[in-house]
Image 1 (cartoon, rainbow, N blue to C red):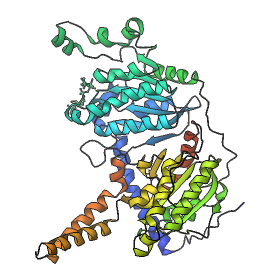
Image 2 (image 1 turned 90 degrees about the vertical axis):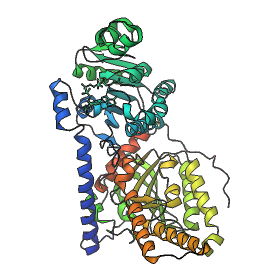
Image 3 (image 1 turned 90 degrees about the horizontal axis):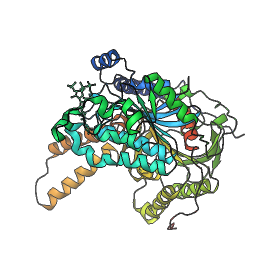
Image 4 (image 1 turned 135 degrees about the horizontal axis):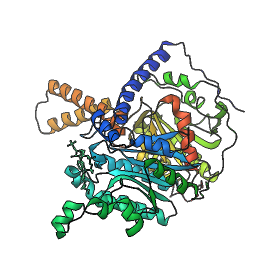
Length: 531
Ligand code: COA
């Protein structure tokens, strides 16, 4: 065993300040999570209950195996937008009859469960996770369809939802629809496209056009039940495979369907699990309150991996990036973690080699971000930093083993890409409350804009006001700072959620289990490395 010894001084003022800052951010994010949990607020929740209906999260809880965890995804979607936090849908990964599934549940207490642009992004992200990791997809449907005032943002891209459902079916990824209420117009294609459909007597309503529309279109007099009731679909149209008596019965039938899917995980099973030697509680104080101060990511690794055991790769070379092999909840992983913030040529080459080795060994990779990006300056340019950064990005892009990313601190510029940022398809990506991500730091960005404006004024022979420059810099700095924060980025579904640092091991373990539903196989087919 090569146990990483912690050198964290938990009695130091720096630790105390970092911990305090982290707890303050967690409280702020917790308050936003509360908003998502509250759905449409007490009025709509009470009305929903008075109709004898369960809430979206209650449906999920009953669907999952008793006392099993649910990894909720994108709970902060729509934060900072005109739509309620959570985006009228609950998504996540949970275990049903011993099978890990992706669940998508409309929240009917938020604008009738209608899909707004953020619900669309969040739902499609959940579908992507089901597809990449080959997990069955269970839709708990009760929705007013497209949010009509924002239809222009949803109608065209939203078609992908139905396309994906049927492609999943073709790819052997089972799809279920348990219809708890309204699933009309475009929404009717969710049960239409799913492999398995359960409807509930006197509750499910599935039609292309309701009675008023039919009356206008054809003059025909009709009612909800004959147009799209569960009984009609179970006995007449054949759209429903199962007729449930009530919500509990529908969930029971849904669980039986999953039990009969005969799913077996394709990836190797985990080895025995050893807990880390250090307390996860201490992760609260690892990141300094000011991100400009570096921190040793080994202090994170030793509190996250099995037995705090890490075999470092090239520990003396490219020391600003820690690379090494470990196990996490029994699964083998390769870790890449930024140490001093900046990526140089050596770090980039080391990363490219390490990623190739992980692909040879069919080993998933975990990226722990705290980088300000690739080094700039004459010496570095002449030393080939573009070539070497490209090499690392090439390796990350073409690697075929599953990648998991966690933004611990900074994740700026092309460093975000090289460390497997969102556009590089990590199977899951989470942020700590201390994370920041943008094209560059707010201070640097404001400084660059100021130099460009100053030079532009000089070229035109105009005066340059120092006072206006300071005001502009201040404004830009505040804007970029706000747009780099985890709440903002999570709101735009650029991550899968903001997590408490203390939960990192559990979340990564859960994700590693999820990725092993699909085969875990590396590649040797990388692009041309410019050496
Ligand atoms: N777009 C935008 N807002 C919608 C909406 C939609 N598709 N569906 C419902 N809402 C809003 C309602 O206007 C209402 O807002 P308010 O409380 O501020 O007045 C709120 O959501 C709740 O709707 P309500 O009708 O009171 O809830 P309900 O539970 O009694 O009925 C539906 C829910 C979905 C059955 C009903 O609202 C409905 O039929 N909506 C339209 C469905 C439709 O035709 N969609 C087009 C699909 S492409």
